[in-house]
Length: 609
Image (tube, rainbow, N blue to C red; front, side):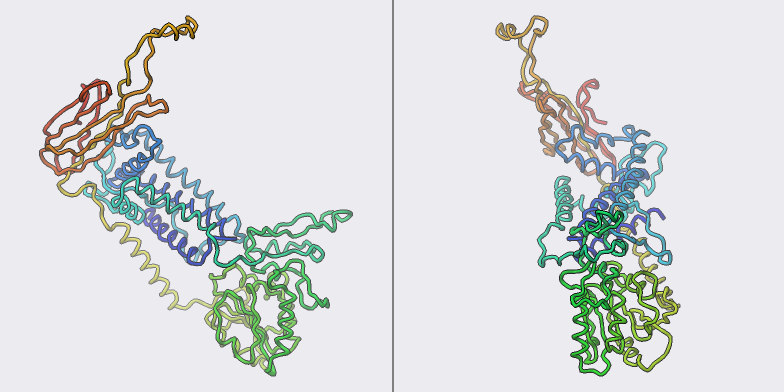
């Protein structure tokens, strides 16, 4: 179950990132969530690698080796990390303690990252219980499958032939098999750089002006703070009441976080159109679509309508444009978001001659500003301030989420003479009694349950199949592996010499060494021939800023099983005319066998093991 949940997380994480990108939710007020979400992908894969290592089956062993080789491609590392996995004897219990720390520690770090990811999203919601629990947060690792040795006493898991790699490992294995380790670094770093730079990409259209606060009309009620879907509003000391009226506060808008949705204007108590001011000014408003203009559009539209009893339709500018709103008896007024509408506008429109009022919002779950339709629904039903007064006939207004408006318009057209239960409308056109205001969804039918079960079953089959297919093998049948791996310090590049008289004169007697020896070491060159053909020729430079460290070589060679004539030559002294160490041997390799070629001066130089 842990494995399948991890694979499901890979799929859902990818679909989530793709959906956000397609909707353009990576810039502006979405930039913070995007930038904090990209590192979570890295954490997920890092946690996954530790999980595969802990299993330590064929896939886990190969994953550890492939990851070590991938990290060895970095130029600033010293000894190759892959040397820790040359044989079963090189793997100890301490290494598995490190694996536990990586797997669990990074998972905890990812949990903190998720908390940080939703910090600018008030009222963040998880998956409803009816839809099943969230997937496990651990993801299959990107290591390539297949192993060449087994820990003593450990289990073989998928066996020596191969292992199902899982979704993440399958993608990573395909990448690792197609390009070199350096190429994989270029692709990974390049992809992450593109994702992180997306918020800074020039936008085709400039962003809308952010909400503006009018200190003279802001009462400090905090309703805009509570309703803002992106936590873009905070309260500060009110400048008009700084002297003599302590405790009064003023709303302040963070321009970087503001989405220009207008939900704050709909929450402001001073946004009521019944105020007698010729120029309606509210405590917080959108400069491009202020409440005063909405009231003016409402008045003008009703006066200019040729219908006897027109219907006013407040339509969200982000919702699909409904052809039904083009009818001759409909006065359409566009909002930045359905949540921008103050509930008092419903009563104001009815008193000004409208036969009914329709509010169109986005489809549930697709609101461009997260909570607009839901916040308006709560205000309309008295569950949130400012609320619609109970005296307003509820059969004279309807809130519809989506583009199916015909049923609602037909009911509103007869609302003047029809007396029935108040209602609100489901996105697909099903009318619900408003006495059940808290129930925003229509009853679930047996067909809906069956359809949901079928979709879940198909998703489970998809996860199950691709968690075990395709099967990766450590080596093709009939092949063996030769690993050339050693860390060796070359000889000094020059001979030691005594100090000259001038050098002695510059030093105190107690600091005069007998000889001066160069610190720089010779590079180590190696040549490997198999059956008379040159398969490796490399020179490893000494490590360290002074070039006085050891030289490291690590190379894997895949060869056919059977008898192989191997010749290895090494030179570790620039002063020597030829090679300083060499060895030839004829070795019979079995299928899937691993031969390690190392250098150990205590064992006579070049060793085969």
